Amino acid sequence: PSPLSWRDGCFSDWDVRLSERTYHLHAFLLVRASSFFESRMSSAVRGEGGGSAGTLCPRDCDLTEVLPHSCHAAFEDALDFVYSSNQAAFEVPASKALLLFKIAEILGIGGLVDAMGRRIEAAFADTAPLLLEQYCRFHTLGADDGPALRHVRERAVELVRNKFQPFLADPEMR
Image (cartoon, rainbow, N blue to C red; front, side):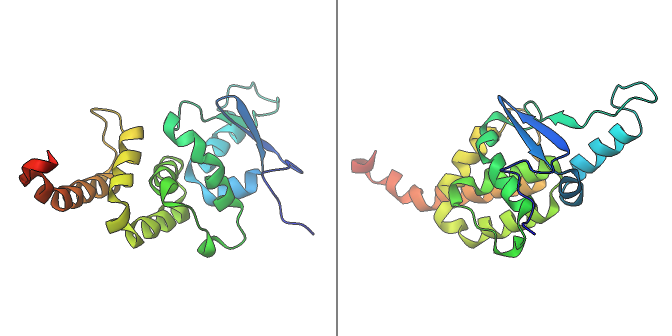
């Protein structure tokens, strides 16, 4: 048999909306990978989803306001990870690593947090400016992004400062 795919919606039993798009997904895979979905689905089954006793529980959720808008474009990559039969071999470009890390933290996808942490660390020295740009795209002033993202930001700022500080001393470079 073919593995389940989020791309075709075959046998799907849970809908996830993100902006204008609706994804027809599989509850079992979402619950297995994500504490957010596990909590959401458990609440729906207990009848906390707004339906009255004896009615079907809602089998959907909307992530449009849950995920930062700048992370929406990386959501399908997160689905690729959740649906992957070999998560250890999951690869993403550096341009999406921190966005996926943020999605993984919000949705409680521990495996993706770990994978993106390794991806970020492996190329940190080469991607620090890109990581800062990604961070600035989803950071909200006054919000606490948590210790892991704060650590990435602080390390990236320090690395960029150290690399570019010598250029500031040169009048021709100003």
